[in-house]
Amino acid sequence: MAYPKDFKYTKEHEWIQVTGNTATVGITSHAQESLGDIVFIELPKVGAQLAAGKSFGTVESVKAVSELYAPASGKVTAVNDALNQTPEDVNKDAHAAWMIKLELSNPAETSGLLSADDYEKYVAEEK
Image 1 (tube, rainbow, N blue to C red):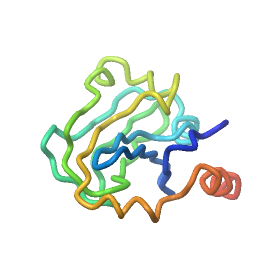
Image 2 (image 1 turned 135 degrees about the vertical axis):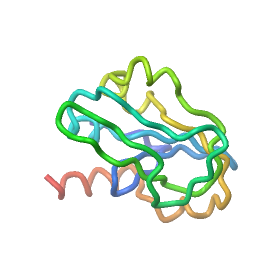
Image 3 (image 1 turned 60 degrees about the vertical axis):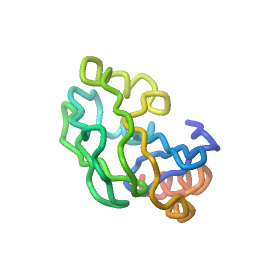
C-alpha cells in the first residue's frame, strides 16, 4: 500500500492533509483493513472544536467500534455526510474518503506527526 506523501499520519491511524490553515482528515488504508467492513461512522457537527489527540467520533465495523482521534486542534468546517449513506466508501479508498475538514487553530501541531515513510515503518513494526 502506498501512502500519499503529502499527508501526515498518526499512530492511531488517522491521516491529515494540510493546506495552509485548513486540513482534511480521514483514516488510513491500514486502519480500514484492520477494521474490516465499515458499517457506520459517527462524526462531529460543523462548528465543533476539536483538540489534538482527543476523540472526535467513531467508526463501527462488523468486528469492532473504534474511536477516531483528531490529529490536530481546530474547528470543524465540513463533514463528509455522504459517509452516513455509504460508510463502505472508506473501505474502497480510505485516502479519498475524507471524514472532516478543519480550520486549524495551531498548524504547527502537525509538524510532530508521521511522514508517509515513517508511518509505513510504524505499521510494519506493528504487524
